Length: 178
Image (cartoon, rainbow, N blue to C red; front, side):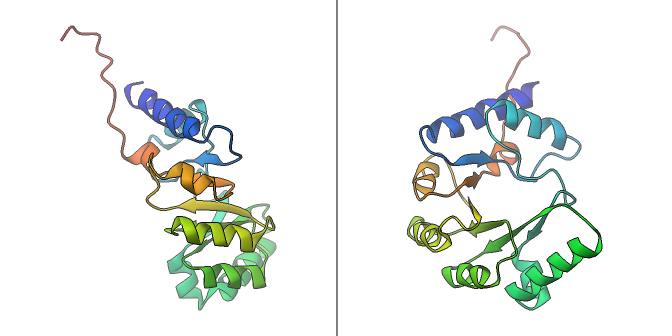
């Protein structure tokens, strides 16, 4: 309860910072070993949304997957082939590191969400304009209380905040007098 109370409260603080905007607050898979499901439930109680629970419910093409596959197009095509061959009903998200990556993803298509990883606010705004609603968008990387609203105002659909679960200090609920 001590840990989950803080996660729900912190999530609510982030959600309140986005009041009036369409952007949703997401958690990440960066959770405490053995506590993932209840930490994710605490995020939901706080008004946030769960990004994904594990490696099985969404394909996330990160920079290392893209590099290993030989580029964005090959990574996307391989992920789609895997989904088709295994008759899966899951989405694909791809991490982009630059506006040129975003343009490449737009050329290839075949994904559901484009993650704008460690983008500046200016580049995020440009990326959202380029994407123009064709795919879901997510800002990620180093986002905090002071920057989350600026990213959301760029028009992204989601902002992921790993700190919701991996930088939490539990609340003392001992009920002992100090």
